[in-house]
Image 1 (cartoon, one colour):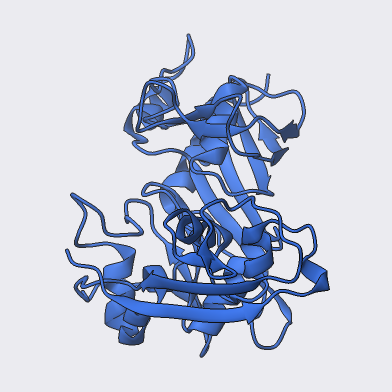
Image 2 (tube, one colour):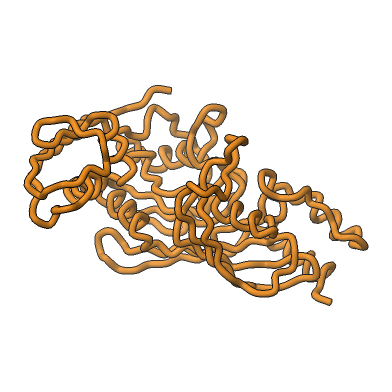
Length: 322
């Protein structure tokens, strides 16, 4: 797979408002639509000059008088194939597209998953997305997580949504079913980073990135709990990692959960339901954001898919709170 790129160039003068700011913070005010992480990568790659000299430290302090030049390659969506894959579109206008992603659909093409992804489907529906970074996708859902996801349809909207994510202005509410009976809701604030030995897993690690997860009880069962979860941050596998760390792993989670064992004395119906639930019981139920052009706050809700609802119904019937 080759990557389509276009040249990104910008030159500007810092001002008194930038006195004492880090380089990445200062230039982010002048590079609308480019994420902070992208700017940091460009700085480290030598694509940014300060007063004519390359500066490779994102944390370099600014005096507010510097002349900045940015010259970098902006990756676009790449030569991925547009494929006629059905999409459940909840909302669409000239700027946004809200999709209800089914469990089992990979969001972004990668090695081993170049076809049959959400991006392939989006490029078929809206070919102009090829011009945008990651085909307009600004946040992801894991392959086996269902629910709402927003796609930007132009660069201005993309920039606005990226900024909202960085400012934690998105409202993201999930539902999940976990092993174990929780007494009450709470918050998890442990930092998350790459697992020190298993590179496909994330973990709570001392030097990880800030991660904030808030959870409330929807319903308690005898051996399980149905939760509402709100995210302040969006770390990879955040809910799954935090719940496993708290010893309440998600039902069906192949990376962080227990084998879907049934509690001692369970009915055959409950055993069968757990045995056949082959994904993490996690659904992105609600998504709220500020519309990029109208500045109106908008939100969407989507009920969980049938397999998730059937699992909850089985727990109500065969694992009621005693």
